[in-house]
Length: 153
Ligand code: CTP
Image (cartoon, rainbow, N blue to C red):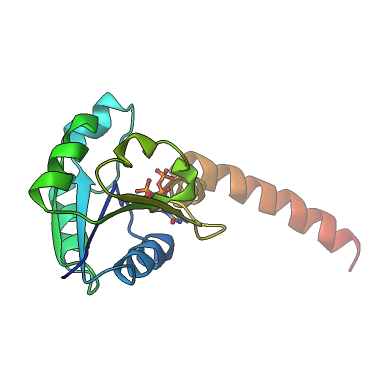
């Protein structure tokens, strides 16, 4: 019998950590389905994305190892999705370790190691350095540094 794996996430600024997780989850079964958090649901979590829901959904839908992607609107829908999609394995990155153990009576629950050193938040922080105010500060700092360097030439 074919085995269905389910996961959820926001997948903002889709990166290699997301891809690694989805590929490893897909290897646990024959079909991978993914719930992508809507903008409205993220607002209730206090999370604001750079990429809007419709585009995040399209990106995840078009990842080779993903068979089906759909909207995640609430915390409560997981049990219903597991039943509806006849899910065998529910998996998340291990930053969620233990947090979905209540689903264990419904299917197998796994937490896979996250990819080190990358996250949507980290990319957003790195990009923040490039906003106008920071670029001005960087220019001024470079000016000071070049003056100091010149003294040693
Ligand atoms: N994930 C992962 N490795 C990473 C980043 C994310 O395995 N380096 C996993 C998460 O554990 C989760 C899924 O990818 O199961 C979707 O995570 P998401 O919250 O959308 O991505 P993050 O990059 O963690 O976003 P944020 O920084 O906003 O928390």
